[in-house]
Image 1 (cartoon, rainbow, N blue to C red):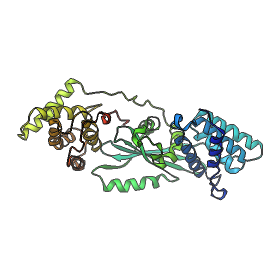
Image 2: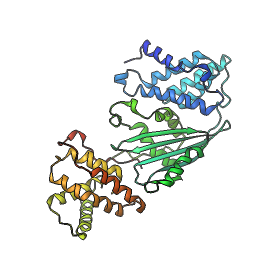
Image 3: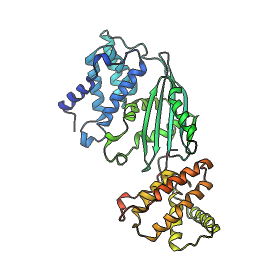
Image 4: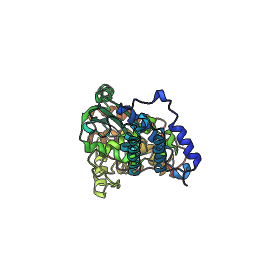
Length: 382
């Protein structure tokens, strides 16, 4: 559905909603880019479901270019200079650059920072020790001033890459400081940020920008964290400066029969060492736990425990099935054993055990099999 005049007028009012005395200083590149990124994020948010919203991102970008061209002041020129780098579509970036040339021809100067070289500084990552969450940081240097961005991804309750927080600041240390302080306190589940390569930043965040799923926000993109919406265009633009490494296309690699047999046998041996009596449902429970946690390499985490117990088993079994009872009995032993044979740090095991134990209180909580809720592991971006 093409954009209507009502759509266009609504977006012009949106762009014109910031009072003149609250517009960023045109010479403050970081402030202008952050402001425009929020505008572009709002446009993206309202065009993510074209069949419902009826407006495309490309159309909205042209409206923004027309608005700034009509405003024809220093703030508009700075916004167009920023849009020439931040716009999501190449056509939007080209249109902004041409509009800026027209303003300059009319006597409206481009900002002093326009055309300056932006240089990548440092890349860092923080997060949890299980691989359920990562925060990436990038800093950039330019003659007009430095800027830094942070970007947090959960890999995720429903195994989609969901962005849960973002930030920007002229000083990278200010973005790193709260993570350093918090992660040093909660070392049983978080690690202190460490330097990483630009390729790691790209690989860890690229999928979240293209493969996010409405299911994660209940079908309502408006429930996305606004810090992500506001920083999304900035992050995408800066990501274009990094090496465009190949990101795993997301193929599922199930455990082979040999791998499955070895893991089943190893866990069974661990249980028999405790002289536990096992019956047929226990054997099936062992197979289910080892199979689910064996996709794309064997791993265990608080999130994988949640998805297995609350999103996989209810899609396959009724709450009174003997296999569910057996899982409830064996799951505490399983996560302890699995943590010991994978790379979960020793100090992080108690938290994993505690979180899994909380899930098992009063388990199962569902009343009937629900095939619509079924989830199997998906490959993570890490």
